[in-house]
Length: 497
Image (cartoon, rainbow, N blue to C red; front, top):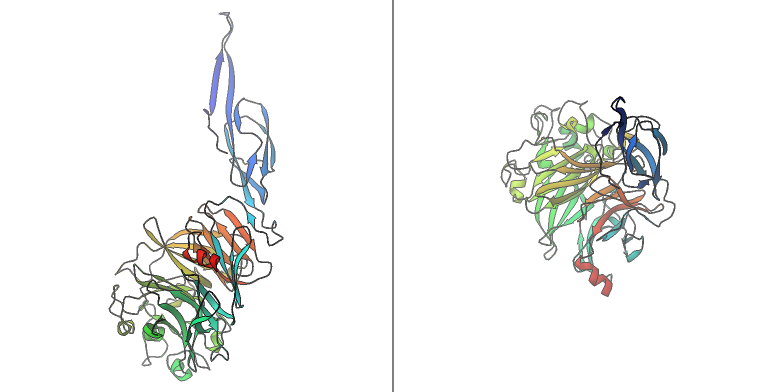
């Protein structure tokens, strides 16, 4: 509740009728008491004579607990007895009680004007469901094959998804090998194999406005070639590719290959030799020699891109590069031929990185401050004239909590330095929110963030950083939750079906 403050000090001079009587001075102070989200206070304050004792109590709403008093340096208990001897402006601060959820009924902290739904994608399973804010599963999909992580809900109610192919040629965590378009009746409308002896699709897909599908691919490089560039490894490795598939013709119409943009500073005279610190638009191939990142690195998964998103207006692709602790931006306006070079396209850099951030150790001297330690789910949004990108920071090295970030990319234009520091538009963390493996963040139409904590469920956080909704999956592991607004065209088709 909000209060109107009177003047902080009122002084009244009280004179008797007798000219021989000296004036009497009485001192009054204003006490203002307010409550933040999650609770109330027993009184709102007022103007009191100096020395008056006032009792104030902070009362937490269900799901919250009292945290502290702002504007008060004394006793921080929920009930205070205050001797009013100075002007005071107090505010009771409450916080969400993370121990309050014990069932799959979600905690709803505020009413929703347009709550929408969550497309809950169960990690590596054969199912996904549409969840409302009451915790009800409004629609459930059961697939014939296990998910190879991502699915997308199409406008007509069908599903485009990545699924695990049998007998995979490469079997790191997150591989798929099949992209399928699943009809309303469960039939396979389109089947695209993205697997061969030397490559396999993995993790994420993205549907472009023209209906094309962007997909991630691991592509084999021989051990000998990797060693010739200084990589200390005894197996073949699988650098990353991005491909664009036309589902009408099943043709790859554009591609980008990370191996066209490598640099290494360990083998003079060898392939791609140069100074990674001077060539920051290139990818330091031997970074993994310096640090012990993940067990998959020794098996050949040296980058582990786990998420991508496409910004159609700027024609750029964001990549979450998990084992590098970075986000990369690449230019999609190039031709495939230009994407193999360092020139061409809207940004003039061909397929070289047009922006990167998160871990300067990748290209500089090891020991610098690293902002990202494992990350997932880059997601663009345009808001208030700004280009923003949300990201889930698993923060494995933090020993206790993950973070949701929204970065401001409004500065991005041709000619910007590739390693420009990216300003944080918004961030959220909570001591109870932590999962080192998967997760996601998406900005909703109401401005809130939908956060996927992989081993827990979903959080919804408003722009003030306050939790307004939580859903406990009770042990279910989620790859990602995607916001589906109530006006999404697929909903009427699903309802009719």
